[in-house]
Structure formats: C-alpha cells, structure tokens
Image (tube, rainbow, N blue to C red; front, side):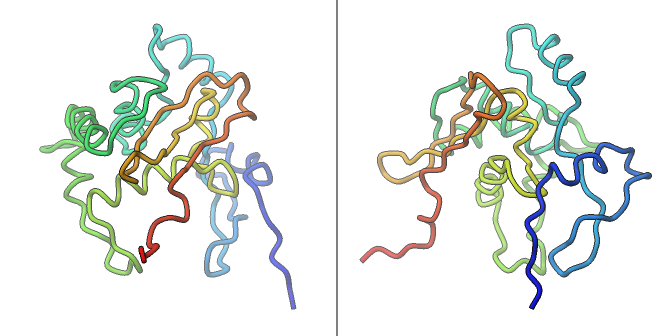
Length: 196
C-alpha cells in the first residue's frame, strides 16, 4: 500500500515562478496525472508596487475583470472590516464587473450567464458560484492557495454567520504579518445539515 504525501505550494513555488511555457508538470492531479503548477503568489516587487499605487485604497491583488477581483472589490467598495450580506455583495459585484468590457458584453454577463459544467457532481447557479468564490478565496494551504495573494496584502475574506444563519462576508484587513492571516468560516460544515 502506498501513502499519498501531502504537497504544499511551497514545494512547487519555484516551478510555478517560471514562465508558463517553461514549467514542468510536477503536481499530481485528481486522477494521478501530472499537471503544470499554477502561480498563486505575487512577487515582492509586485506587492510593493500594488501598495504604492493604491493611494490609500485597498490594493486588490487579483486580475481586473476576474471573479476574485470582482468579489474582493465589492467588499472594498462596501467597506473594509465590516460584514456585508450576500445580496449587497452580489449587487456590488455586478457593478464592479459590469464596468469591465469583454468584447460585446461585460465581465459580469460572462460570469452570470455561464452554464454549469455538464460533468459537475453538484452544479451551481449564479448564487452558488458567488458563495463558492468566497470559500475558494479563503484557501491558504495545499497546492492551490487561491487566497495567497490576498494574504500577501495582510488580509483575508471571512464568512460569518448572520442572525438568521445566512452568510455575511467581510474583508478582514490589518493583520500584522502575512503568516498570521487566518480566514474565518462560521458556516463551514453546516451546509447540507438537515434540521430536526
């Protein structure tokens, strides 16, 4: 019997820092196949540049027009370090991503009109994809730490439980060091539970 060893992003970071065309397939995929590692972090030069160009605003580290950028920017626009309802976050995301043109349409329309993956075990509608974005952007461990760029800005997304059990989202800033960033998810493990 072979045991699967845990691989972290630190183990593949050097390979992921290379230009995409030069990277080797060293990450084990779900079906055992080898995959090329993605880059999830920013260079120290880019971190410094983002902070310098922020002009007092929060330096959103994600690609403009992408769903992670839209989600984080929605929280920035609604207010840092404050909890916001799903409806408010969705509306703000629509404004942020709706301002980014994508050919004849907008980044929001592309995201909102995307059909669920046909082979998905649990296909998600628009609301489900936004909620999933929030949980994915909290990841800081493993080979796919989607929230690492946000952690490099000494911040993270917290998912809090509202009075009625509905999610509240907060861009938590002001951590003293990158390695102290710890996202909170009050709803983790509570989805799918049936009430008695």
